[in-house]
Length: 271
Image (cartoon, rainbow, N blue to C red; front, side):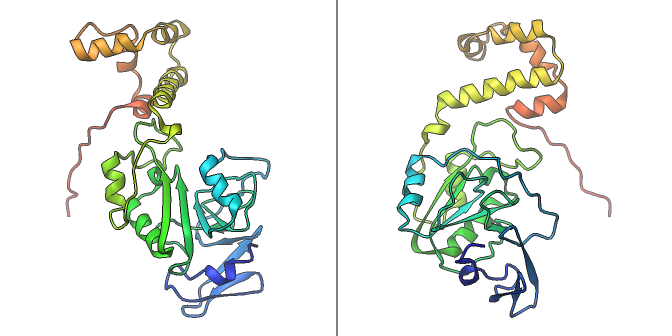
C-alpha cells in the first residue's frame, strides 16, 4: 500500500476522515468501511477486476514521464492503467486493479481530501465518464491552489471500450468542462494529430467490415480508394467512391462504431 494513502484519503460519501486498521479503511464520521486488496484501497461497491500483472499500458509521453521522474510534485494519475514504473510521488487511480494501482474508485467522487495534489493527469479518461463536468469539479477540489491538470480526450475517434464511451468533445466542449479553471491552452498533442486521426479512423472502418463479415473482395475495393475520392464525393457531389454502398448497408451495430452522428427518437413515458 502506498505510504501516503492514510494521509490523503477521505470518505467519498461524507468527506469524513478515514482511519486504517485491520487491513481496511473506515470512516470516523459515517462508519463506512473500505477494503484493501493487493495494496489498493477499494471504493467501489461493484466487483472489481484484477488485471494480470504482465499487462503494461502505453506510456504517458515524455513530458509527463519527466515530471514523474523528477519527483517534485505530488501527482494523481486518474485512469493510470498498468504503468511500467511505480513513482513514489504519484497515486494511481483506476476502475480496476492494475499492477501499480493505489486506489480503485469513481472519478465523479474522488476519495481524497481537499487541496492535496500539485498535479492531476487524466489521459484518455474523460470520454468514458458519464458526467465529465462533475469529474472536473472533483479534480478542482483535490488540487492545491495553483495546482494544474492535464487531460487527453477524444474528438474524432471511433467507438472504443464500449459500452463505456459516452462523449467525444470539441475544444469548446473541453473548455466548458473545465470552465472553473484558468486554462493555459487547449491544443492538439502529437498523439491526436490529424494524421493519427485518419489512420485510426480508417483502421476502424476496415476492422468494422471484417467484423461484419463483408467479403474480402469488397474489403479490398474499399481499401484501395483514396482520400481524394472521398473528398471529391463530398465537396463536388461526385458519384460515391467504390465501397460507399457497402458502408451504407453495414448492420447498425457496425455502423455505430464509425458513424458521424446519431438520430435519436424517443417518447415521454405514460404515467
